Amino acid sequence: MLCEVCGKQSTMLRVVLIEGSELNACPECARFGVERSPKPKATSAPVHISEAMERREKRTQTRDVLVDGAEELVPDFHVRIRKARERLLWTPEDLGKKINEKKSVILKLEGSQMRPDDALIRKLERALNIKLKERPTLASAPRSAVQRGLTLGDFMRIEKK
Ligand SMILES: [Zn+2]
Image 1 (cartoon, rainbow, N blue to C red):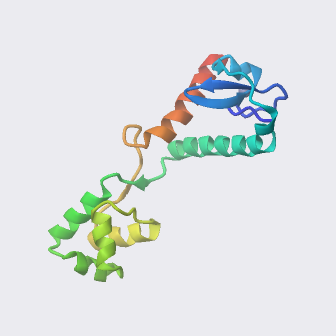
Image 2 (spheres, protein in one colour):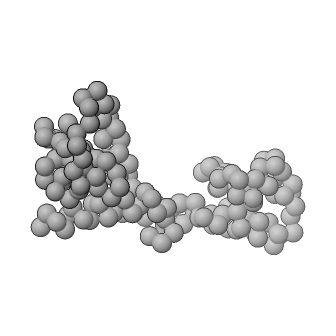
Image 3 (cartoon, rainbow, N blue to C red):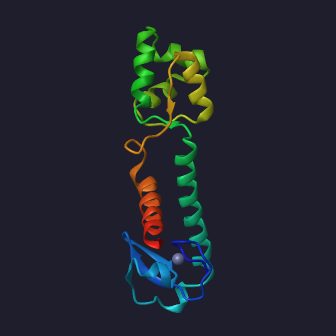
């Protein structure tokens, strides 16, 4: 099985509590968590392996995003859309026509009830001459994903020295 913390193969995984999540950890990593009594046999095995891989993958992706500085939809996209539209003196309907979307789509976007996908973002950016995607900073990035990956990873790296 794979250690869910460092990703190494290990036959001696233990369930420990790290940062509020139960993880299967190898003995090396288990030191950093609070040990839990092992779960009944029925809940272990194949499911856990795929789960571990998935979680590990997510963590890796999160780190990649930060390293590459990939652009992400800004949190205040709805404000930017509305302000830019009003500056042009367009009604939501006008904007809808420009980008081939229904007025209801524009209203949902401006009401933050809908996140535009990449294609829609590009159309909006072009029509309104604004930017809706930016490189995330640590402060604005979603707390859950980024901080998990970072703190846990950095923590391990420091501890191993
Ligand atoms: Zn480990």
